[in-house]
Length: 305
Image (cartoon, rainbow, N blue to C red):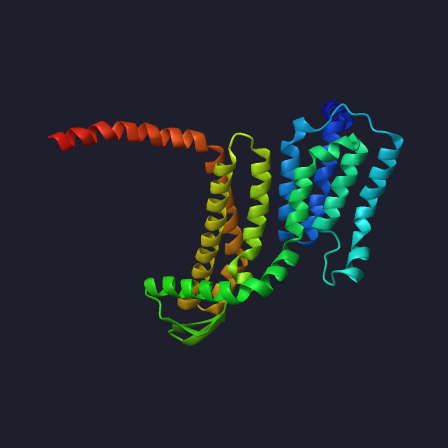
């Protein structure tokens, strides 16, 4: 009897068009994770943003036969996008990744809620498309900015390491030499080490957030954008510094292991912290003003006495 009730509950959930939409939107994330765990980060953000926009979707919209047929055709074709992209653009693309998921969500929205839903789903789709274009943007910027940004980043990192008491020199514009107990250890800082990828992804997420936020003026949005991007750069400086400190004290093997994971940990910690502060900015500012108001009279009394 209990099993029958659970089955009926499951059927009632699946009969609801909105519930079924989000279940079908979530399932491909498992497939993305199977081929590339870290590649599922951007699609997951896109899904969460789509879920947060649940109230904005035209839930009562009736789709035409053309919209349903076209939507499901796009949805099913998303599983075969690999065979189109690999010969033309990519040679090392995973079978199912972010481009597949973008096409899948596009078709799913069209099939379930019609053309009108695509405007409401614009921000999640834009997030995934913009973040997926990151390698192309990075390569384009590399030819113009790399000769200036990499040496600056090297000099900044060397300065921090010397301040921490680590014996370090520069071999060239992009090489750092750690004078370890086992002898010199040369480490190269390339364009990707600077953190362009994380800054671009953060900027994309930030643009989406600011587009959705209607409570701030343009000046405030620009200020928060600058804080976010500078913070992302500093987080990347911390990441590289931690890796080099690990290389210095524990060897290159330990540094290599840290290199694989610390970037994701720091990036998402910073992302969570920034958006928490941003979402609570008014309450935090009110708290600061209240505390300043309490401290001023004390300060005046002391100065008078």
